[in-house]
Image (cartoon, one colour):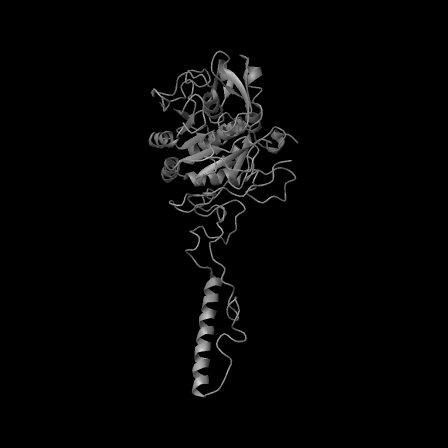
Length: 437
C-alpha cells in the first residue's frame, strides 16, 4: 500500500545524511510539480484552507538559501552567514541543500497561477537562512551561534537537516536557550540505518524525525531509536536547487525534517498561543502508524508516533496539553510530559514532574506500614523486658530479610532508570536496536 493511502513520509539529506542528490533538468510544471508526490499525499489544497504558515518565521540552519530562486523570491529573509566572511545567507550558494530545505518548507512556485516549480507545505511562512558552511557537517560547524541568532531574530521553528556525532557544551547550552525561548527545534535523525543517535536530533528538547518511503515503509537508511518522535516523506523528493539546473532530487531524512518543520509552521500560524511542546503534541497525536503495525508501542524506535498528517493536526479538536508535550526536556529546563499524560499513548497515571521528587500513594502507604511495624517492635520489646520474658530477637520471624517487614514493599531505588520522557533523557546514548532487516 502506497504513501498516499496510508499517509507515510520520506526525507532527503545532505547534512542529516546524503543518499541521493541528483540535479533535475529545468522542467515544466507537469514534470516538477507532478513529481511532488509527498506534497500531494498531504492534500495541500485542504491543508491551506486551514493554514499557510503566515506570520511564522522558520530558520533553516544549513548551507545558505538562494533567495533569488523563482519559487522562493519574497519568502526569504537576509539571515546571516557564519561561514568565514560573514554577511547575509540569502544569496546563491554552491551547495543547494539549504535552498532545497527552504523550498520544501515555504516555496510558492512561479509562473501563471504559481503552477510551475516547487510548492512548499507552508507557502506563506518566511525563511530565515543561517549559513554554517558550503559543506555542512563536521566539527568546524558549531551550531551555538546559528541557534542563538535564529532565536534572537524571531524564529518560532528551527529546521536542522544535519547530523553530528556529538555536541559541545556550547551547542547543548544553545539548544537549551532555544527551548527556554519556546522555539520548536526539528532535527533529522540521519541516514546510516543505525540505532545510534546522532545530534542534534538525539538531544533533549529536539523533535527527532525519521523518513518514510513512498511505499509506506520506514526508509532503510533512516536512523532510529527511542528519541524518534515523527516520520515524514524522504524518498525521491523533488525540490528547488541552485542554477543552472534550478531543481534537484534527494532521498533521506533531510527532506522529512523539512516537511515536519513546515507542518509545525502551519500549526504555529493557526494556533499562535500554543507552546512549542503543544505544537509537537498536535503533530504527534494526529500522526498515523503503519498498516499492520498494531503491535507497536508509541513512540516506536522507527516510526515514533507515526507519519505527520498536517490537515488533522490543524483541524481536529485536541486539548493543548502540558507545556512540553511529548518532547524530552533538558535537565535544566522544566520537565516534560514525554511518556506521561500528554504524550500519545502515555500512561494517565504517570507523573510529568521530576523523577524522585514526588511519592506515589503506594510508597506512602508502605512507609506508614513500616513505621507502624517499627513502633510495634519497640512496644513489644518494652513489654517483653518489663515482664522479663525471653522472646525472639528484633528482626526475627516475620520481620527480617532484605524485603523489610511484613507488608512493606521492597525498597527499589526510585529514579534509577530514567524514563524516555523524564528530565535529562538521552543525555547519553540510548540502547541500540537490531538493524532493519
